[in-house]
Image 1 (spheres, helix red, strand yellow):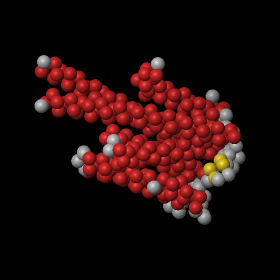
Image 2: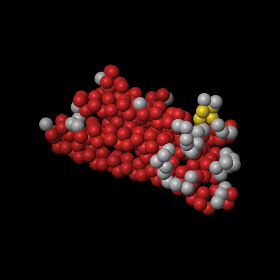
Image 3: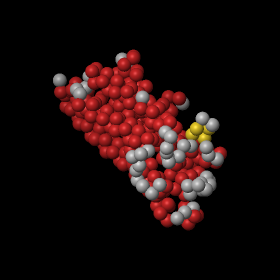
Image 4: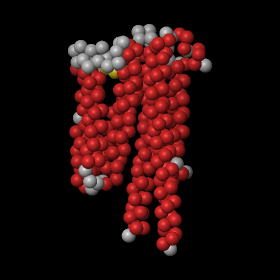
Length: 57
Length: 230
């Protein structure tokens, strides 16, 4: 589908547009990956606390 | 039903964000006509400008929450202000990167120090980067909340300066699209721009709510650990 748009633009112009859009998507993806890692860490820490609380009881 | 929506706010926002992003990309690449003046590279405008405006919204929201810290002594607003500014810095970095790529495509250079708009945005970005240096160099507590709030409020003054710089400047090559006479573009271009901006605002809202929830859980876990160790 994108091929229908690509040939109308000179190659270098197309590359710049692709680069600009790619930068935004990579940044959002990186952010999601960081948050996913953080959630895993929180889940692990919460699990440890639950175990500690159970041992206390 | 409203309770269910509130509970799944982040999920609902994520779905809305994906839908808006898909709509924006479809409009940008298959609907809006190629600009006769700038050519195909003008399509960067539909992401670059909404990203820049969203960074202003983030900093503005951060300043509003900072005002609540000082005015209402709202402790929760400190974290909200911090997260909004963090998002603003991410969007600010993306503005500089996409703008630089667009500059290379249109002007043949990655950066122009003679352009007030560019330099002022860089100053605004660096100012908010320094916010994190201040925040992490002071012990958590009331004084840190006040210092960060005052800093965030100072920074927001730079936003109208950055926005108006291009309009006050006599010599410029950076395009001016929004003037007192309205947007200087075709209806289809303006519609596409609005959808792209809505998509960027939805990304901000999603990232903001997820990051804020993560920070709150982090805080609760810290409190719980202290309670269990005492």
